[in-house]
Amino acid sequence: MTHAHTSPAPRRSRIAVLASGGGSNLQLLLDHFAGTADHMGEIVWVGSDKHTAGALARATSSGVPTGVVSDPYDGDALLAQLREAGADLLVLAGYLKLVPETVVRAFHGRLLNVHPALLPAFGGAGMYGMRIHTAVLEHGATVTGVTVHFVDEQYDRGPIVAQWPVPVLPGDTPTTLAARVLRVEHRLFPLCVAAVSSGAIVLGGDGRVHGHLDVPVGIAAPEWRFGMVPDTVEDATAFATDVARVFPR
Ligand code: GRF
Image (cartoon, rainbow, N blue to C red; front, side):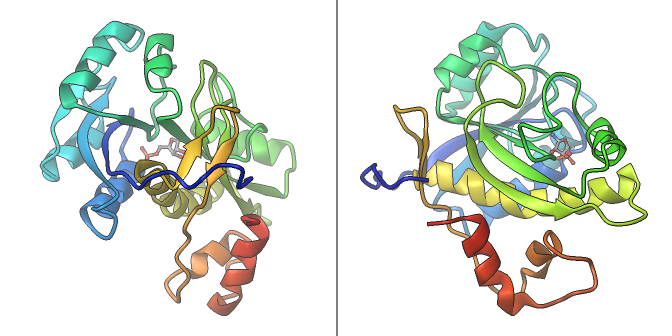
């Protein structure tokens, strides 16, 4: 991250979230913006391409309006739903459909996705859910992780906002690996969404990501280290140096 840019004025965004599945990432976003980050943004609408998606039920329980994206490839219809909600930031939280170009253009630099691997590895069309973790194990990779990125016209390709590594441990199955990665998604994604929502991180006209990602340091963050070392080690104090190593200033 370069500091060529002057620090943008703080803002508070109206966030729409698209999700296709159970919505555990959505839940962490709902909790985050209902809690400490409420001054940085508000979740104003949740949409899904599946009317049975658990994510919609979670939104309703939090009093957030919802909608079904009946034709995920109809960009004008989706744009109309987003405009009606007054959204100015769009977040993909386990949304499996390719976002139409009209929406990508309308939300250029205001459209984020979380992917459970270290992109560009193990990404692209067809690479989602357990398929990713199965491929990581089949390739014998020893490190995987989480990527949060701005979205462009292709699956899993846009400029990277942040990544966090997760070890592949002996005896891992796609299920155990997915669970370890998901725990890190739940910590990294809300911080990235809040940083873009408040303007602390922006996609510059040079196509590069600019700004600062605030990472809380505290006893309550041992599993960040979890992403770095085997399960057994619980040493939060070294956390700060880990962050410094992964997020160079
Ligand atoms: C997460 O692993 C996310 O990275 C991926 O889909 C999964 C969705 O999980 N894109 P949930 O619906 O947020 O629980």
